[in-house]
Image (cartoon, rainbow, N blue to C red):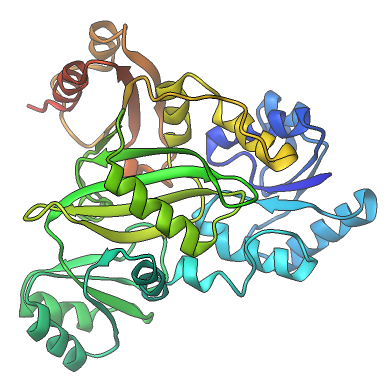
Length: 387
């Protein structure tokens, strides 16, 4: 079987998929814009072949690369990047080359927030009131119905880019005076905590792995206000969150895919409100957090699902695992060396973050795990303490 992996070198942890896919008998064919010599050894040695393009945005180059692979290896069985940024392009390539997976006809439900709401409602989920707004007059009508604050975000967009919380009419007018020339959806602002429901399904749409993470704050606030971030996994996933997450998996017909759903749990009544679906793994090092929480290898399990439709591990969420990001422009009390010394027993990973991701995830991160959540809280306070 032939598996094309778009951009196998970025994000940096995605190289972990390649050796496992190769071990299950796939020809793993890489396409990216990086020099082959600059790829890490584990990736170079596991790829069957690599095709460098000058620009991954150049669709014609990608078409030529896939055509070359088909000529040399035959039918392409899978194509993935696992990257939200390339999700639509991946779907177009699958459609053009008749490769199984999400097609361009399906993609609008995964990329357009207004279309997501339609399926959330079908799944029985609560949603914030929302509407695609194209004029200041329409926005004023919407605000008169829901009140301030409101959130304005691109109907089709990646992460929290160009997303704004509008507190009053001055904010509203300023937004329309500077609005990018794209469709925006306005939503009622939900006061609540942010959780994710993350996992993997098999070819039949059955959830074979799931977990949940609680976030300190939304990515919108983190990016717009230049704040640092932490988020942590749960050992016990609330049953009502699992049920609504499963309903969404079923309605979106998620097959042989990772998923990352975002929810608010509203403060005033603890109800869950579906915020967004992402048909790819959660970002950053969250896949590695899966592994640290359960003491297994999610990269291998994905390869097993694609190859045999079997999830081989009887997993258990054993630990709280927390991502703690720091930013270079902030004046922290404790040095990197002090952090490593103080929490040497519970730090399982630390790493710089790519500048492409740093506005949301920080410039440097520490990943810690413990069965005692008090230790997690102590580490968060220590690492984020500022002068």
